[in-house]
Length: 362
Image (cartoon, rainbow, N blue to C red; front, side, top):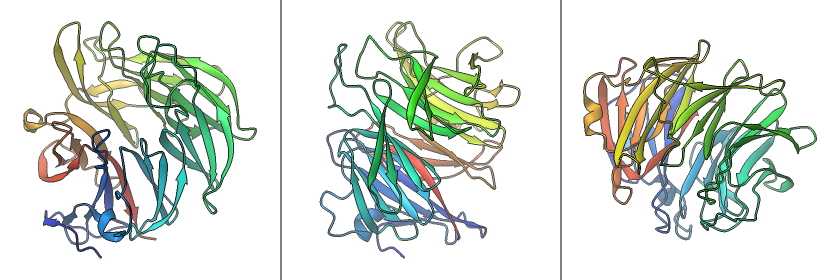
């Protein structure tokens, strides 16, 4: 299917998942966003497949790949600083079309529509930033923008549950005046109907099968540490719970993903207060809201990971994929671990491996 640079990894299997795409963010301003593909049927890792599938694309994917999702037979890549969403055939990565959207961030889907967060304004650090962010509704058949909903400042990841769209507002451009709320948007009226105060500089947000929200805070890199929160009954009477370890410490929540009742939480946080890094590879049971471990890597391989950045877990096997951003300006590394935390294989990626999308046989 591809003629790009390939590397045999050897991990093959036959089930309904054919492989996965990996979107490499690329350092801001470098136009080095690329996309790789791992083929489970052959055990082959293929680098930079978008450029090969779309040789006439100018600057290929563009500047900073911020999210990647497959919906139906199409794949959607949110390219933040290039102000666009690339829409491709899921099986071939061939370009179908493009949606122009300023400072776009994350995407979710519901009943034939895509919902995308947008900072709406320019990339600019300003404690008095005036442009609120928004969620944009896009018809997935026509790629037309059909509606917008104003939310908080610099909205990041969003999810949909119980007839509501929940949006993590970061205020990330407004240091030290970060946002601290989750917007609640009624999906029928597509209007914000309230906000839930959580913590400063929110980033990731995911709904579990019971409708609870899991929300991460980046903190402020000084007194407010990165942390993980669970919001119960978010569409009714929300209760915000801070998730801590048995020792009473916070989980660094740079990224996270759900598989069944397990929430995998990874991250490295630098504190200007202590001038030190703190890293964890945590698992939380979403039903009990208990931290099961702060390091699911059991063979010592974590010592060779410079900066855990992207994460995915194979829906069937439970194998854990970790993207190591390393220096942010050179190629990263993808690590694959068994459910028991043992290294199975690793491979070179593009710059800043961050976002995964599993390709199912249809």
